[in-house]
Length: 222
Image (tube, rainbow, N blue to C red):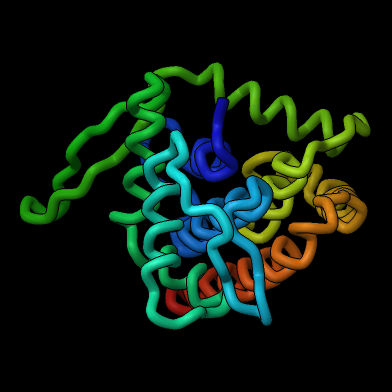
């Protein structure tokens, strides 16, 4: 069983290199994935457009607890876009723990990589491809075979598009059709009255942040 963020990071990580394919936007996607799942699990909600913790009991996911505690401990209530950017820019709070959770599950392994003989960083190549392939097959069945998505899969599909992973997940040749079907699925999915507004705001904030990150990276690289 995977969280939305774990599924996203498996789809967005190069199996051999162990690094994110779209590093500029995946961080925002992971942040949004965690916040969205907490909303779906009725741990947080939006009150007057500010993120509010409604259940601070411990979960069985360490990085969920980290996010809940930090939001709950904040002296002022803050909007969703603040928290998405905040956690996206704090790899120790989310990105690293998400990778390590997949290491613990025996899907990835942690390796130290040295660049320019000086700088070191951790990478997470795949050692068990089966879980990622199952996720890929599932989302392809939802998009192209009209399988009904549950709210978590619908959110994952929204994140795939926001993080510019459509080509990676569905193939470049299927991009146009996949984008159309993704729009239909996300627009028509029922999240439930309690969390629908929170999810809408999360999706909007992720899209803005991720699109800005991709655009900025493209300009710099050109």
